[in-house]
Length: 466
Ligand SMILES: Cc1cc2nc3c(=O)[nH]c(=O)nc-3n(C[C@H](O)[C@H](O)[C@H](O)COP(=O)(O)OP(=O)(O)OC[C@H]3O[C@@H](n4cnc5c(N)ncnc54)[C@H](O)[C@@H]3O)c2cc1C
Image (cartoon, rainbow, N blue to C red; front, side, top):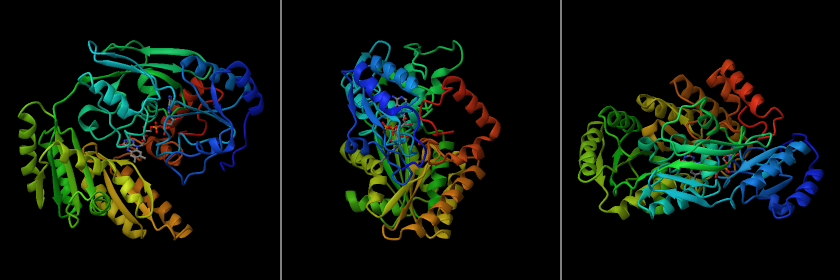
């Protein structure tokens, strides 16, 4: 339960939806609603939605927003619910609008290299559809087979190839957005360059459903890159792997993937997926190049000495695309593999890349101090690490107390190193207390004034982020 009082006239809203939007699919049974109570943050308090609306078109979303305003019932926008900050979890008595049925690709424009889509499409499905036309949509969260483009826009999701191609925000050219008063805005479009007025698109992307609801997006595509050249390097210490990451960056290499896994994660992944990883290594890097022709192999050739000079005990090239796929998939499923070992809680700190070795040392020390197992993996090329604390399933409250202490120390360490408490998962509910610490009260007050201006009645995702 959320504990927060229920706001607005819920029964009145449901009656109005049924009479004014008869074609809309609306879930009101408790069992159905229960499935929308939580996102991937099962440990956070969450409320039971009043109902779950599953629109198929923009007009229904506009009508829902207007009705919610009329009956003063808050709205939680939701994609696939894979979020890791609690921002798509239910709010007691609020309407959850889930976009999973609003999942049509509206246009693939090969001339302008854009795709225009509804928000509910799964990231991997969009990638596959544009791939059939020889095109490539870059942002690829590890959850890409489950998460939606709307959710990616809500969180400004990153992913495995964002080190080269940028995060979701960098791929957005246009948005259709329903604002809190029911106004429908069309922002941007197919222009690659467009600086007319304030940048509303960058503001909305990553706003976690608190400022506007995305009903359509026009996204930037690229010609599909050639098959990748892939290597993995094993290191005797986390410090050595961290130095290799900094070294690869300093050497001016531009890998499309630069991912890290520590020993605890290597063992968990290898136990589940049997990839033949070196389970004695303290850390592993997955490095890939997608440069054209022989340049990819040359880029990986250049990566080998950097890894070796940093202390790599072995550097292994993937023999074929299938093997490279398995390695990539192993990294993608790192969190799921850690979940086999206990109750896993993924964190999301980021630091400047040169400070990765220090951050890794901090994480190890925090885990030892608080007597909690930790597996660290992440988008090392972006300086974005996911220390994942793993609690004994049977231990209960004492472990949670130690976990809370460890999380606090983790965030302190990230900020001390000039980093962030969240690289890509978002503040949501999970890290709300830390926003002021990181950004400062003045910046947060500016954020509050933006929220007040765009959503004065606090209709969209209240209590999230701010
Ligand atoms: C195993 C695993 C691996 C992951 N790997 C990554 C990763 O590599 N990179 C990464 O960035 N994240 C990762 N995540 C987190 C998560 O998948 C992403 O945050 C993803 O973007 C969420 O998409 P979703 O469709 O599940 O959205 P939800 O969780 O349903 O929603 C996320 C946010 O977007 C908002 N939202 C949803 N739809 C809309 C809309 N139409 N308009 C406005 N706001 C909307 C919601 O209100 C919420 O604030 C991972 C999660 C898991 C479980």
